[in-house]
Length: 372
View 1: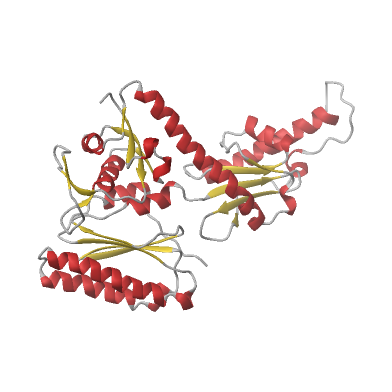
View 2 (view 1 turned 30 degrees about the vertical axis):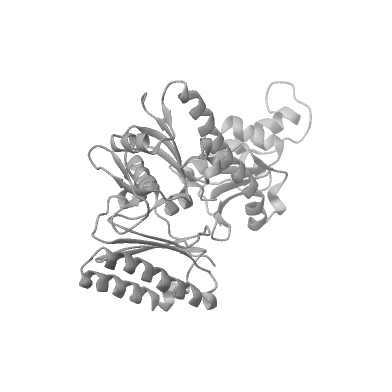
């Protein structure tokens, strides 16, 4: 079983504000198989040594280094913690605190030491969480299924959800319909199914209200058309076609993954289309110095950042001016990571992607709120 606990985008923006003489950011692969976690703990010890070496080179007080080492020693010795892991682990530590986040996506080793945390790997996990709700809708049954990247799919109990179309709205019994009185036949069937779908919609609203997870339909073509025309709950264009009555939660989750992949790919394409449009209005840039200045003054509307790359340096807190560094140390930090944090705090939409998904293959791409 996977155990995942991820911050929201807003929380990542808040984490970007943390400042300390020593902020250690460590990301390492882990395993949900408890008997195989020893290698992860050994790996953590090696990564910590790299971080401590940077702090010693920077002249950090030995007592503060000892405080950091003690926190990591306590974490490494916590058997219960290591027995409940996912595919990756993020550890954000200062001499006074240590935070951990377990992630479903698989990361390679990362060690960053600065006066602030390195947060882009966390953002990747929140950008494309591979989570959704599935509405399995047929005339004879209705289920709402929660799907995530880490836990088995499960059915959600929904109050006032109708059990079937016959109970919710009755069924037409013959094909004659005169246009008055009771509806029968095809027109009657459509009427009763519409009543059924409206009741489903009413039950779903309080459950899905405020959720940022997409809804995927698993249903037949007639019910899909009715739901899309009558429901105020938006659903992705992709549909798990056919009668879902005999599909298990696991079957539905597997069928949903390609639909989610297509949804995420479309989000990136939407950025590219808007980027091209805004370029003609002088509202785009792939230049890090421009992006840093825009982020400092709240000028970024949308931002794509490379999840893997690190560009070392510092950004002035007041002016946004960038000073690049040849390599990382305990003083500088990832510039793109800092731009990301400032953009999040000003309400920008930020996505962490692979470099190949960024226009021109750059470290970042910005759509600004005003001409540059």
